[in-house]
Image (tube, rainbow, N blue to C red; front, side, top):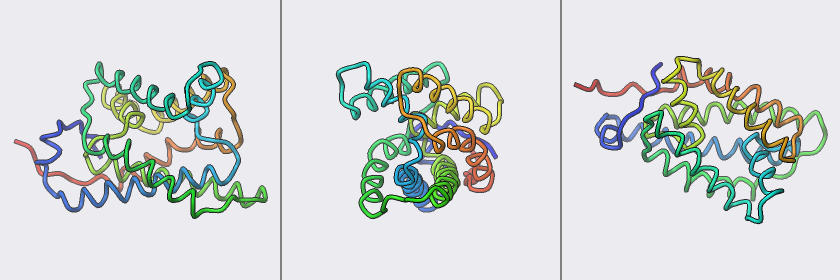
Amino acid sequence: MTITNLSPRQQLSAGRLPLRFTTLFLGLTLYALAMAMLIRAQLGVDPWDVLHLGIANHVPLSLSTIVIFTGALVLLAWIPLKQWPGLGTIANTLYLGLALDFFLRILPEVHGLGLQLLVVAVAILVNGLGGALYIGSHFGAGPRDGLMTGLHRHTGVSIRLVRTALELSVLAIGWLLGGPVGIGTVAYALLIGPATQLFIRRTSIRLRQRS
């Protein structure tokens, strides 16, 4: 399994476009479903949202503005990693929010600790699969996943360890800023890296050989 870093032109000329487009949007849909499940389980938000909510405690900005600015800062970190954006980067920004809103409208809140824990566990697996599918379509990752794949390529450290280190770092900063942390938050931070690595080995699409 190879994490690619293709320019936008290379992404479109690498072949297998129908399969890759389908995989991209299937992956993002599953990603949004997992996010909605985690929210409805009511056991804590994901680490990045802990950071966003923590920052919101200290600055007079809306949560959506904080999310945008945080994403922009993460994209700046792509520059030294020489990480290329692409359709997946744009789709992650635009489509993911729409899909999340849809799933939040149709999914009920989950009650009862046993069922909540089960939903969190399933959400982490679905998130790992969704992330692996859209990254494996080779159309570029979203800001935060692109940071993960860029660090993986430059350091040689496994996806599992890079993702876990990023999630725990973001979680720690968000918690220090007063962001809300729950059982689901900690479980996500520890398990999303292994879940993503588990699936990305099996879902990454083989591309046309470049000359």
